Length: 180
Image 1: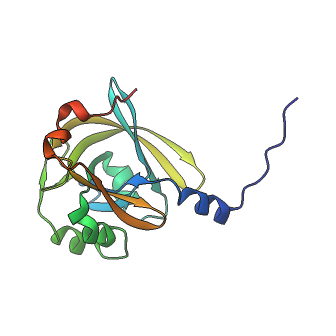
Image 2 (image 1 turned 90 degrees about the vertical axis):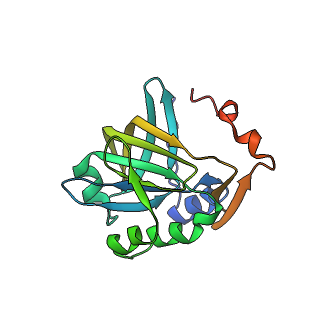
């Protein structure tokens, strides 16, 4: 016998999600639909073969049209020093002002790569699923760059926090999580 699911109030859900710490990232895009970017914590690894990330974007986001039409993104993993930049990309600031606040380069897709981020995952959007107010983007990683991850920025309890290692040697490739 199948039980009927109870509705969970959106505020109760948001309050519970505040207990789930998550890495803070800036997701960027560039192409014929324009350059855009937004701060995101709803990102995770799907698989390492082929390397694929899941990125959630609100369809009401100012970056939504550019992201979905360009079909490329770069997930820039932020360190503690990027908190002000995260706030900038998470606000109502025009795209040109957001990008003027930091140095950027590119990898394979042309999506902006933050010059001093912990890691950058350059991706092509392989698939999209609509869920509620968001699109879930399945992003195939076509290039990456790792700059070091000693003090990453996370969001937990509706506030920014820093996590990291005390010995930078501990942040080497052998510390990577299995993407399975």
